[in-house]
Image (cartoon, rainbow, N blue to C red; front, side, top):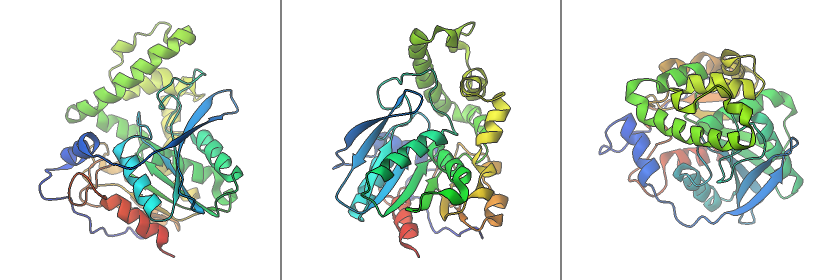
Length: 320
């Protein structure tokens, strides 16, 4: 598809990609969302925690958060509130270990955890309540959605019609390298801090995970993925993991309309992370790359209230 032009501009008072990333995450408040939590079992003896926001609608949006996020993040709550008001029920799922409780098996989650998304979608379909289902993903969650759509290809469940993804790390290796830069150290440290805590909790049940490894010496996400993510989830090595799970490699196989929005000033994304050639060659995936927005920012006017990303999502979903 041709690349979509974007009219989005950040408010004049917010100075650049880092501010557009940090301020909404720290200071945005979304009122009025009261989830109903449900725990479902996975085939490997683990669990996934689901947070529903149901208003009796016949349409369902399934939302996936980003790396070390959860369903309470402001970008999740803002999208839920907007969708509920527009006639959609929502199902926000927490990645394994992200719902406030450590999961039961040694594995956590990763950028290609499409089998967990498949489990969530299958469970939603079994309710028999929804005539239409769409997927919305943020950052790592968007990457998982694109991988799932590629794997299912023309065999997707018929109610699943569209997807919208934001701030997707199209090339995982390049994104990890970008996060390793000095100017992005604040984000990297936050991710590593919570990931290391989860590893220490896991090691109490699975001591072999940390055999010969001191988590405090892990300096970046590449090392974390090399030592833990890749071997723990059955990949040959870290490069195999990045190659198999990078969203840009899955775009050619997608067969439903997808809107992908990545801001050009996203501090997480190297310019080469943008899957421009893959999207141009695709008949289904639209890439919109506004100049502003940061990583999961996209404020419209102020910190609170509806965001441009939420309005843009509704526009895409309602388009024929």
